[in-house]
Image 1 (cartoon, one colour):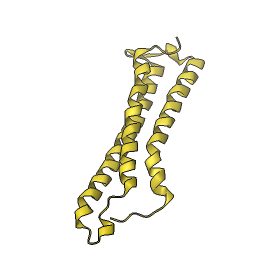
Image 2 (spheres, one colour):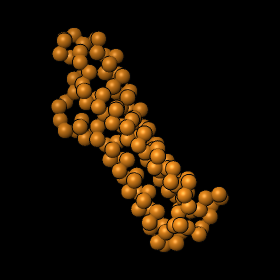
Image 3 (cartoon, one colour):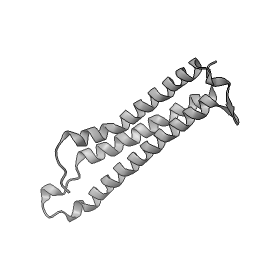
Image 4 (tube, helix red, strand yellow):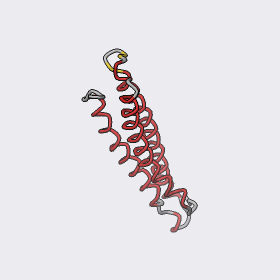
Length: 126
């Protein structure tokens, strides 16, 4: 399996960390804006409106990172399966960028999980 040598592969490997950073900014920016404009008084079931909206934003980012991790892992596994079928010795090596992509997506997903803990444990605007 040959892969084009370009910056797009490296950009794809760093995309997971970009999604994590975007989630961080959305959560804490949304918390600040929600507290500033007084949305903490509205209740939706057991949660207030800010907490519920931030949990939904976190879940959307987690779903996106989960899909990105699954996609990167399946591409890496497909390259490993086709490794033995390559006719030439130079084509038998799995590209390092595929392994790097999968590992970085997995690390970004694991780093995203603790971001939800303050939302569940602390009350906003305290």
